[in-house]
Length: 98
Image 1: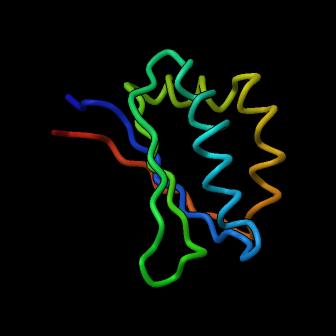
Image 2: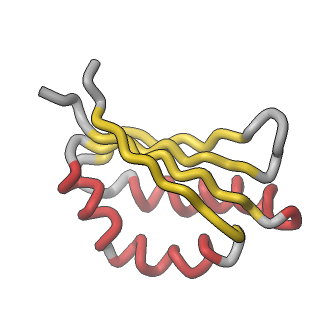
């Protein structure tokens, strides 16, 4: 049986928004997510070669908990600001097995 779900979202952040994206994640996005039932952790990683590629690693206890975050009022309110800072994104979802 799995130990949760991880969502890895790679964002191609606009060059002028890279610093702001990190601030937004740390001060607004992650704190809002921490109030979601089933939230485990959230990290933001920066590609060492292409500094505009930032990856959010989000872990929840279950797919339902992740869906609850995405459907929440907090996520809905923060999504327009998030979307204004990147040109493209790619999502991969993993089951945590160990």
